[in-house]
Length: 335
Image (tube, rainbow, N blue to C red; front, side, top):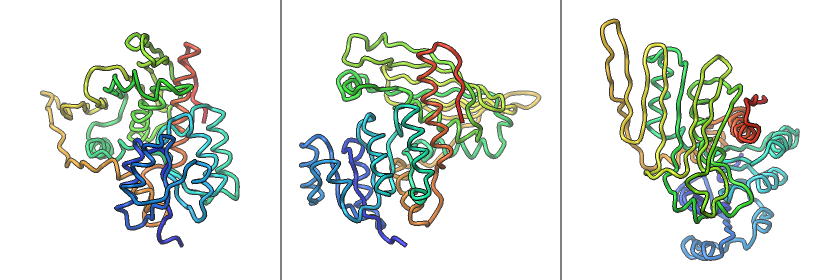
């Protein structure tokens, strides 16, 4: 059994957080990292005192590498994931896992092959670790609001200047659902334990049409789940407000409302509706939890916070939303 994972990171934007997580974790040995930006490479070489690779090809061919974090730009994810699978390397990838149905099918089929079944992988659905959403998950699971019949969620990016001038407008394709709204899709699927069945979507780019960002910056989707639950997802990347998430859940016995300012629950009896503040213990380091749990999962110390089936289903749903944007009609989510 592996006692310590020889680990590497590709992509040193959000990947910087993963580098620091590896440095602190007693079960990982940081052996390499790479970014296409030479300045970032040089900066972290000095900080971590590691002779890092000068290309992804050099990194992926490193001997004894058994864990890779992929935090590069979205358009590189599929090729890097595919090379990790070919090398039998466990991997953890930032969303999205890939960008097309064809790519998703290839990843799924490659992982099903007998020689690849021992490869462990996960995706950084970080909101599952947020104390607020963990508390909401527990409330729903307890039955406090009864049977869910409708959910509305928003992913509000809140960094419009970065959207206009940053890398998202420079790559061949970018989806605000795949790159942001997928977090809310994952929360809905995680909380309900029910699969999405079909979706219809619309979008606009009114706020960014005169910028370098050439894709829809705001997407709204209506979704139907298998047991009749309805949902609405908004992915808003041009909002002039701090980055935040909204999740409103309606059940047969009450409702939960969660936004940037507060989270609360309404419970109803025969006489009146009661408002209850949802309290939770804040954790500034929650963004490290998903990766930590996955490290322990690789080493067979505990379960992962996600499953392969869930990862593929949520990704399939995000891709179906983008398909609906093009067709302008209801599209079924294939299982």
